[in-house]
Image (cartoon, rainbow, N blue to C red; front, side, top):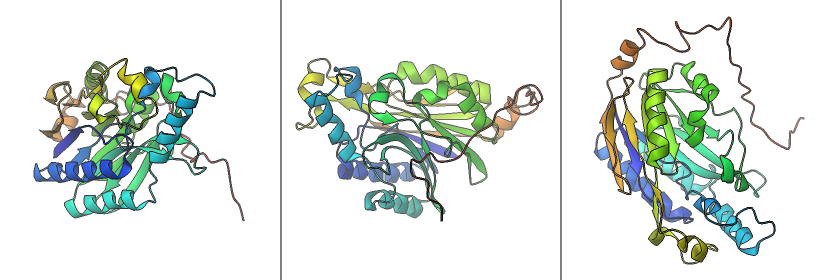
Amino acid sequence: MRVAAVQAAPAFLDTSATQEIILASLDQAHQGGARLCVFPETFWPGYPFWVDLTAASSFNDDLQKRAYAQYLAAAVSTEGELFQGVIKRCAELGVFAYLGFAERSESGGSVYCSLAAIDPERGLVSVHRKLRPTYGERLVWSPGDGEGLVVHDFGGVRVGGLNCWENWMPLARTALYAQGEQIHVSTWPGAPHLTHDISRFTALEGRVFVVAAGAVLRDEHIPHDFALRDEVLAVRQRFNSGGSIIVAPTGEVLAEAAPHEETVLFADLDLEMVAAERHNFDPTGHYGRPDVLSLSIDRRRTRTLQERS
């Protein structure tokens, strides 16, 4: 199976323009022969990078509140016309997509770091909300739940995915391995020093292929009306640098994008390699000890309002 990892810049906080980038990237992946296409963490409409560069924890700060309001306004709903357009394009191209997006909550006032799995025939098959936003991200994103910790069958291949530092969570990885995962998708805001080591480790630990996608973001991508534009540009002109990489179950790097390069990364995966590498190690199979160590998952979607009739 040929796979693709998109390393690009979103049209930051412009939901419509970023959708066009997503559609164009899907077209490029399809033209390159890919059947699976992976986008970075919250690529749509961008990662809240400002929390690491400004006084984001300042309470009742006007600029911080405006920045959050702008991010919330740009957040995406899976029921919206733009999201449905992406689902339609996947169907037309026959491409399975893992798409990182900022998901607006049902209340309308919160945001989740979400990862959508879009099957070309079945449409939206899962939305995984990041279990625990990382450090400063907790000032912007709400914690997720276990509903989306699922592995999907596409063309006889088992594919699952996690957001960013969830890939460092042993039990989250184990949950996917135990479902027969063969291709592990990992999405990132864009930092090679974060993605490369864990991608190789995950490939070796799970005896899986890893497709990691990271975004790029530079000063020219920040809209002039963004509330904290002057503050972030005073600190840095380059924010996210990519880090997209595709790794084999042996730990071999099959493809790697250069820092700051906007590209679609391709690799051909020999799925027989997964079975061969599990000859001597299958972490949730013959090398597991479920009588000693086991894992349970609560798959319920967390909601404040529980309606019963």
